[in-house]
Structure formats: structure tokens, C-alpha cells
Image (cartoon, rainbow, N blue to C red; front, side, top):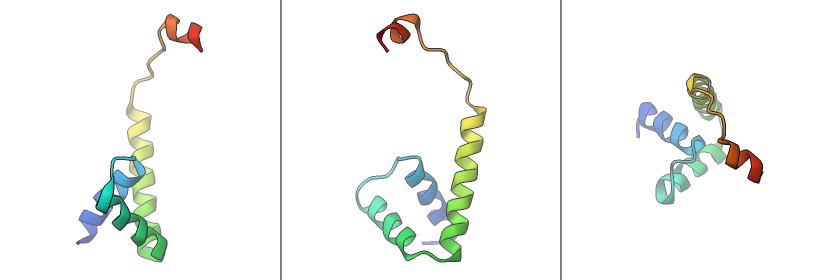
Length: 68
């Protein structure tokens, strides 16, 4: 697996979009640690933060607010 593939998998892992063997593979790689792991995690966190910041804020409908 090349670095780009691994970055994609790490991003999907932190977006909670992996399961099964791919999730297990990423978890094992993350557990191993090291500078390449920290760099991939930092890139995924940065990308997810940017993605979250670009999403529009949606107000909950009144019925949902009332139930909460």
C-alpha cells in the first residue's frame, strides 16, 4: 500500500467510514506509531476540520427541538 492509499484509509477511518479488514488494518498501523503515523493522522484531522468548516449550519426543525 502506498502513502496516498494509506492517507485515504486513515481519513476514512477517522470519518468512521471503514469496517472489517480495512478498519483492522488501519488500527494496527496506528497502534504501531511512528512519525509517518503521526503525519497521516495530522493530515486526516486537518482535512476533516476543513470539511466540517465548509458544511452549512442547519437549524433543527422546531419539532425536533421540542422533543429534545
